[in-house]
Figure (cartoon, rainbow, N blue to C red):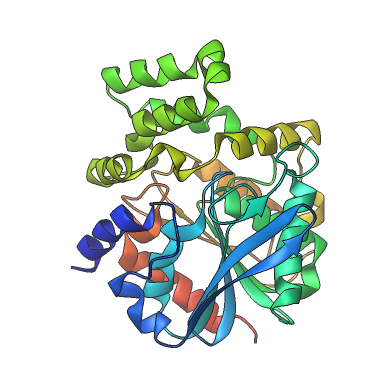
Length: 318
C-alpha cells in the first residue's frame, strides 16, 4: 500500500510551482511549515521548511530540478526531522537575474547552501542529496565539514565525472528500439543547440524507463513531467563548469570524519562502481544497495529505503 501511495504522489510532487503539501506529508507539515528567501547577489533563493525537529536538508538532482519531488522522503522519515528544501539557482521559485558561468557553478551553489544554513541559524544539519544533489552535498561537506552532522547520498553521482562515461549507456541499454531512436534524435548536437529545453525534456521522457527497475514508475514520471519541470540552461552551465574545473573531490573527501550513508538501487544506471568510488574516499561510509530498484529508491522500494536511512540517522551522533 505504501508503495502505491508513493507512486501516486510522484505525479503531483514532480510538478513545478508553489510547494503543495500533499496529504501524505500532512503529519510532517502539522509540526509547522514555512517558506522564505535568502538574498544572494543578483537574486534570492527560495526555500521551504516542513515540520520540526533536527534539521535535515534535501538537495535535489538535475542539475536543474526543483526539490518538490523529494517531499515523499519527508513523509517517509516522519516527524522527527525538520525538512529543508532548497530551490537551487535557476530552479523552481528561486529568482536569479542572470544565469551564466559566473552565477551557475559549483562555487556559487556551495555558497548558496551555506548562506541558507546561516540564515536559518543552524549550527549543524544532516545533508541528504539525490543524484546531482549528492554531488553538491559532497562538495558542500568538503568546504564546510564543521557544519555537517551526517551525509546521506542517495543514487549520487560520483566524486569525479567518471560515471558520466557509462550513465547514459546504462540508460539506453534498457530502452525499447523506439525509445532509443527518440533519445538519439533529441541527442543530435544541432537539434539540442537549437532548442536545449525541448531536447532535454524529450531525452528525459524517452530515457525514463532507463532510470528505474519498474517501467510503471517511468510511465508515471514521463506523464507527470512538463517541459518546464527542470532547466536545461542550469544543467548545461553546471556540467560545463564541472568539466572545466576537472571536478574531483576524492582527496578532499578523505579528510571528512562524520558518518556517511551511500544508498543506491542495484539497477541504478549510475552504476555500482560509482558508489564504490565514493566509498574509496570515505572509509567511514557504509553502502546499502537496494535490490530491484533504480534511481529513485524511495519511490520504487520505500520500505528498505526508509528502514536503512532511519537506522543510519538514529545512530548518527547528535
